[in-house]
Image (cartoon, rainbow, N blue to C red; front, side):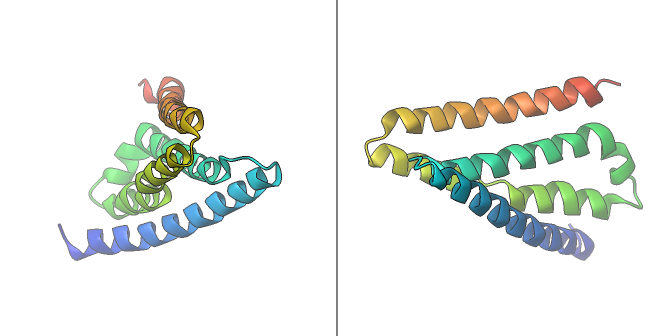
Length: 133
């Protein structure tokens, strides 16, 4: 661990967190227009899917290039910092809990299933397209 890596994670995490806030709020507001009980969960799902897509593309297409000795700052900034700040398991968990607590058990279960399966499908798709060398 060194200062350069810590700085990369700090910068990337900050940018990723702001991106999550922008995407999450935007999608949630669009979902709320339809009166959806899962409006908040939709924003989190969108952020998590986009973070998974970004991380998968980085890992399967740029890992060697960005992880070389001279470029590890960028991989740390993007993969750990940005994608870590952009995705949000804690908010996903809380949204799911709130759905269940408010009597929307089916929506809570669907949030779990759709979120996990969609992110896995995105990672698999990127791997199948770019990951096989």
